[in-house]
Amino acid sequence: MEQFIAKYPIHTHIPVAWGEMDALQHVNNANYFRYFETARLDFFTQINFLKDLHQSGIGPVVSETNARFKRPVIYPDNLVVGVSVSEIQQDRFTMHYHVYSKSQQAVTTQGWAKIVMFNFKTGQKADISPELLDALKTHEQA
Image (cartoon, rainbow, N blue to C red; front, side, top):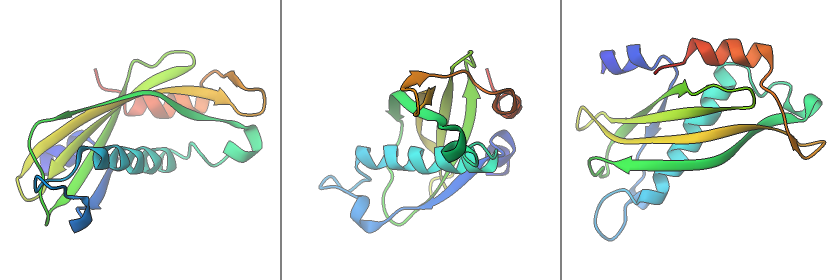
């Protein structure tokens, strides 16, 4: 676990709820996208990305997302979702999610999302600000 935390300094702890399991007795795949969303918002909060969203009107939009399930997760468990960034471009970047099960002591799921900057006032794509670029580069992994 210490190696996982060291590799992903921005991470989110998520307890698995009983109701997230499906008829096959493991966490339903749709829940992982909620876990990713929670980790994404934690990441944005920790790098102070969303603080000026309402004033600037510029924020993130998920344009594509994916998940790869390596091991089933069952209740009870506590997950840690580590986040990293790659493929930083002028107006977009990719976020990577790594779901670690405390019960299994292993990564159970990996995912990614393409994030595009969007100006909600104009309805157009926007460039990544210099402040955001610096923050993203801090968490960039190849």
